[in-house]
Length: 179
Image 1 (cartoon, rainbow, N blue to C red):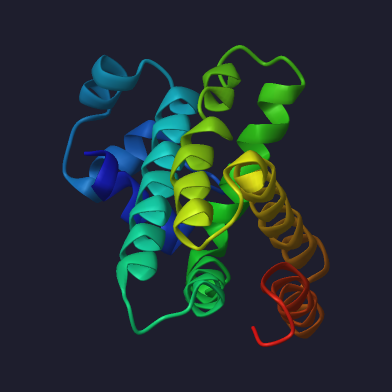
Image 2 (cartoon, rainbow, N blue to C red; image 1 turned 180 degrees about the horizontal axis):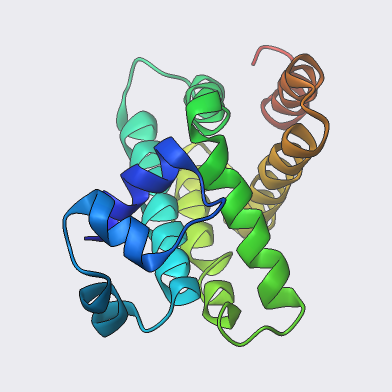
């Protein structure tokens, strides 16, 4: 159900999204959505979590590919995250993040794991790439924060060229000039 809802939101966005309309679109009753998720906001939190999980899985597959350098794996992930067809997912992420930070209880659970779910696999990737273990976690956090910041920049400005250039500059600083 969450995967179908994620696909629908990715294609159609969340403007004017109702549980009844979403249920009709994905072939379940709105009552079933309420039963499983409680509220529209709680369903949206689960959609964001599913999208984040897919992104972490993609990064793991990219990092496991011996033909890709860590910088090239990051570039592939960046292209995926900035695909215009997925912009609704990224907007939803930041919208719910903002709600949670303002203390809205229906979105507060999105903060659970928002950073920590990424840090362990990113830290492991840093160590595998030869980063000193004492610095690996802070480098992982820096990379995560930079990518999220540039995603927000792209959504706010629509300046794809500028965001891409900034990401490339970050990768060169992060991985070295040969990145």
